Length: 132
Image 1 (cartoon, helix red, strand yellow):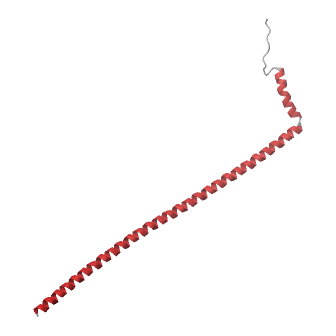
Image 2 (cartoon, one colour; image 1 turned 60 degrees about the horizontal axis):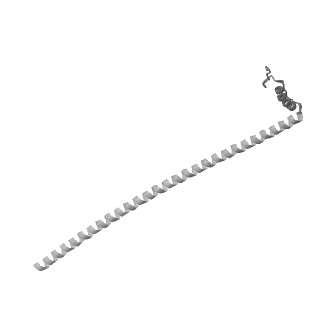
Image 3 (cartoon, one colour; image 1 turned 180 degrees about the horizontal axis):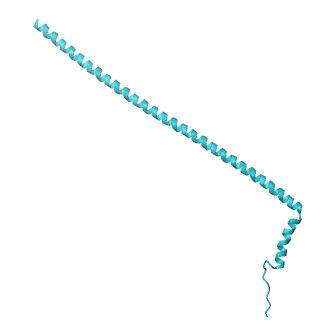
């Protein structure tokens, strides 16, 4: 038949007319544009306030984290000091036990020597008494 229909392209007057009408309406309505601007400003202020709140929240979280880390370091240091004191007390107790044990052994040795000396003295006295 030889009849062809044009495709909808950007040069199609119907297509252009439809897109231009919405743009023209927005441009022609200053009240609507002003309301849109106010809404945009309000949204920007709200977004700015939310961003500021989030920034403060993050700073607070960081501050609390640093405080927690400092507390943990102090506690770890105190635990380490307590462990060192405990070890020192244990070593002191061992040293005292050795000193006491050595003293007891020394006292026992001295007592044995004194008994032996006394026994020798008695034997010498008995021998002297027999001789007389």
